[in-house]
Each structure stands twice: as C-alpha cells, then as structure tokens.
Length: 149
Image (cartoon, rainbow, N blue to C red; front, side, top):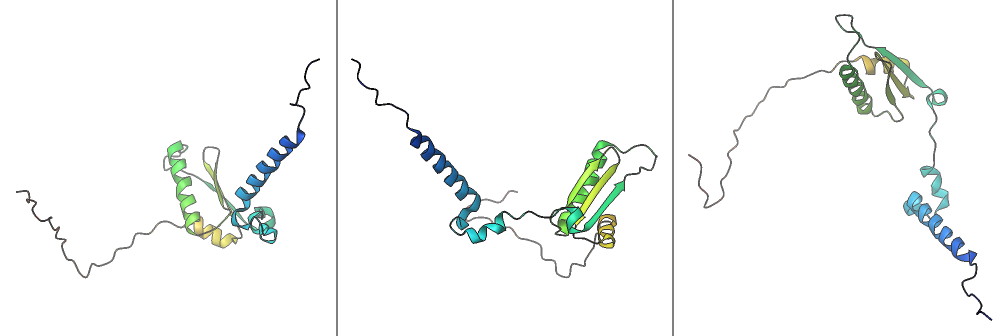
C-alpha cells in the first residue's frame, strides 16, 4: 500500500496570497490614508467632463502666408505653445489636441468663452527693463593656482 499524499489541495494558501496582494494594492493606492476610509473620497474623485462642468471649447485653424497647408513641425510647435499658455494659466483638466492637418482643439473646463478666447489668442510679450546697477563679476582663483596669461 502506497503512503498517503500529504500535498493535497490547500485552497487557503491561494486565498491568503490573493488577500495579501489586494492589501498591498490598497496601501499603494491610498497611501497614508489606508486606515481612514472617510478620506478615500479625495483620492477617488472623478472630475466632471467639459459637457457637465461648463467650459469652453475653442477650435483654431492654422493659416500660412502663402496659403499652403502648415507643416507638421509648425503645427506641433503651435500646439505646444498653446499647451504652455493654458498650463501657465493654471487650468486643470485642459486639453490641447491637434485635429487633422490644420486644426487645434483647446478644451478649457470652468472657463468662460471670453476668457478662453483671450487666453488662446494673446501673443507673447517681451519686456525690457533698465539695469540700474552693474557690477562686473570677479572670479576668485583658489589659493596656490595660477591664472592663465
């Protein structure tokens, strides 16, 4: 007679491993608020879309001086400029996307139409100021080193 196999089915091991994995994932997502379920709502809050939160969507069409379609590099540069303007305004949930070869769609949740148009249509400004005090820098050489001649 063969000895009984002690390696029988142990489903509790699989359940224990699954429980540990779930707990690790919970701690990774909730961080320091793991044991404060009342604070979880801050981490799992879903923002409303542009259609529900009110906002403005502006579609800009690129035009070149010669009437030809703009190059892909020019459109990419225009999109990045618009993205930096919107990011600089501190608007969260914004989207700046290129559509086709000559359109850029800017979605700004929670922003009125006049403010959105002013934001995307403004041009950069360079300002100059008078230097009132100029003192040339003197680099100090470490002791014992020689100065180049």
